[in-house]
Length: 364
Image (cartoon, rainbow, N blue to C red; front, side):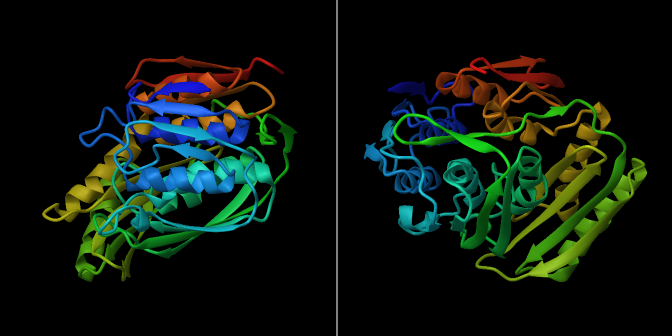
């Protein structure tokens, strides 16, 4: 059984998600202790428990201590993930509902389902635009296109917006297939073999586009966010096309989404509104994050750098990339991956600074 300390590194839900995804992919029984020990409310929250139960359903896993608030968990897969149509709702894991991230659950389930073959469909209910998780647009415009470069084809669709604290959003996803192949592992599981990635040059900036959205709020909020963002980026020499939009949902919410498309890479940045937060501040947060990344000249934004690490650990060959900022999430993910797989991950760069990452399987 692989023993994982959930307090390692960033000490949050990513440790659990990475460990369970790899347990499902490799068939290795896993014991995670000190779950989310670094958070104000440690243990399994609704979002994490939903991911646990979902993965267990996919691969007929035996679970121990899979309850809300649990500080440890044993996950014992009995088979590889099975293809099919699945529905999961974060709200069902907590009394009174939850805005737990549907996008993080998608990332947890996607690779095991891809290993099972094409044709699986997911319907996930919960938060689609909530703090500390990728918004839907990041999955659609940055994460899935990167997976496509590695040989995994999947699509996603936003069915309803879900903002904190009510949640109530919904997204749908489908695994279309992979140009890669699978190899048998233990417990009748199949592990993906994806294509490696060498991305050290991003090329010239082609365009910056985005959306300023107000849900159940006056139209002038979206317009103010868009106007401010256009002005900030224009002053920095980056003309942008940002569309103000209105939407209806379970609860009010606002955000700015920005996508920077370079010749060889994409980067995404988002800022969320909240009660009492000026529209201009929402715009400034997303714009400053984009400008900080742009100034470094690196190919991958800080979020994609840690999210692509696990798929690259499945690649048949040596991968390398530059990121504009090494994060604790990246360093944590590298450590957890190496507990499950024969892979060497070298992160050249200190936390908070630009970095160069090399991922190399040691068994191929």
